[in-house]
Image 1 (spheres, rainbow, N blue to C red):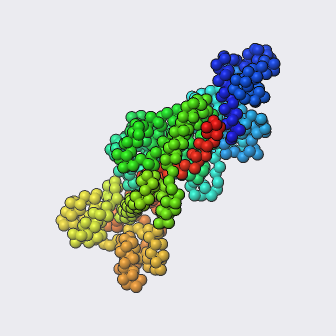
Image 2: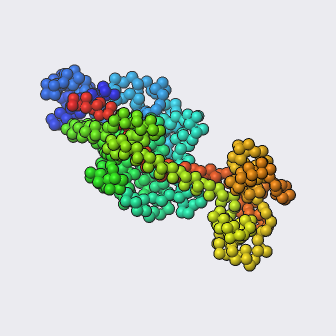
Image 3: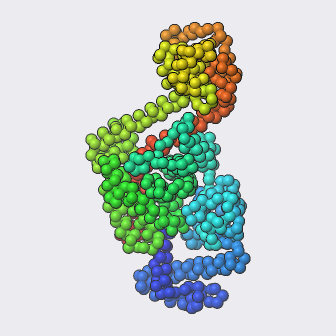
Length: 624
């Protein structure tokens, strides 16, 4: 990449001279009527530039020839588009096998033309038509190709013109490599998007029975959102986190796709809402970081726009000097790493926009910030020796300005907070399983609440009568008590077991008990796994049950009853397959909630190694 950057530095210097002198290389005396270069005029111009810029004459001449060729080619493309409506699009491949790319895109002497080709197509064609053309060139299936233009994913069914594509536009084609192992693990792009969209939809519902997500601004105030905005925001946050995970695995192309998907979802939200949170700013930073890692310099204008948005939003949410972060957290050490990355990216973008002085100024600023963020490696070793991770050590030391003892205390506090959050999540999952075991109320709108059952049992009522009373009263405790006292004849007094979970049977069997005994114990105790295990241990694995319980149908063949006297499960209870689907949906929603809410400091763990390498690369290029 070093040669490419040196070429770009030379190209920018030559372009500046051409612009200042108003030189048009595609016109006489530098080009003949036929379009061929006028060697004599170009050599004279190269000699002038060589003397003025103190550069090699031959390098200047070759750059002038390259710029002239590109200018004439661009004019021909525009003329072709005006006369016939056929646009020439410049495709850059990322993630494709070099063996299947067209030879012209690999053999060009221009370093910037490597892994590139051209496609001629009408702008009235759909995104899918362009993907078909790229597929024919690369041999990659259409469903494994994603196209990006101007920082946006091209949609399959919309025409190119409506998506901002113009003649001579530069398109980035990303290959989605669907590794079978990743597909099985749900890590492939298509699986990640499908799973994330489903879970986000569930998580954003009002009063859904799986999980809920309360959204707050930087001051901790709850955000009032309608259902559409909440779903879009949940999905955007989730896709952003998925992208960050891919970025950690150095899957930059996958990360960029997920980030751009997240960006599209954020755009569905109210602009005033987005001004009150930092998520959009951090997403812009991550997108531009992907551009840099992928060396996608055609996205420099989009990168410049995104960094300007990021800077303005961070200043509004963090404070110009991070004073708001310090007021909320007591320290801004880790957020300072984000600002360092911002200034580094701004310096690199300024370089590619030929703003050399600004680039040098920002590089010096980023370097100073980077040095202040470095921590003692021996301190990291000491913290890791205490059983903490390297990431925790790094975050803790930065948060405490390098104070080793304070960092250990801070990390311990973070761990306790995460432990508490995980425990609350575990309890929430357990409560949901208990609700499902008890079944739905008579009106089918909700599940019977286990806490209400325990309340009635604590008042001395039979558990099974209590469940039946809550079912018929639709979880209204006062009405349930009235029924138990005044109308017990309307309730199901016969002991019936709820459907036994195969997962619970496996858990008890793992303790050394027979599978059938485990199932009977669960039936006896109405699916309460703790009570079933206690009974088995207290009676040396022997379960005493009534004949009707022993003869009960197995959970694989049991069906829901349609009458009140047939037990807790009513006619509206879902079939077993539907139950499994809902359980999976619940797990996905809770997993997504955990991803969004329990990664408070994860995005701040920047090692600075890559940043330091980029900093050195551009400093060397600018001879700083």
